[in-house]
Length: 133
Image 1: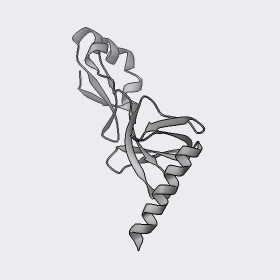
Image 2: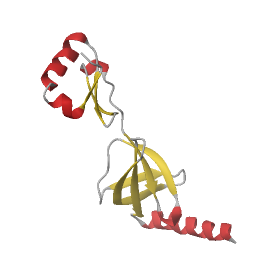
Image 3: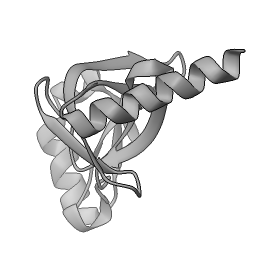
């Protein structure tokens, strides 16, 4: 059996592909336009990604990368310890941007969720204005 199948070609053979993976222990890639989109294999051979990498887009032009246990939804609350206190943010937008090479980036736009976090944003804006001068 082949090591990879186009996703359209695999539709008719999915049962055979799964049986082959189970009995041989091999993994088989399902591809779309030559890029792997899924793997069929015995459970112990496929390691799940733990969490999702996101880029937080904060007010005042700030951004930061993070790993979350899952993709948040609009309206969800995200908490972040900045070393001086806990910031509370409300998710205002969730956007995937797909790259030309097949990968993607998940952007999470945030809005301050409490007075403390609003004061952090005010400090960022003040520092940004000072740097421009």
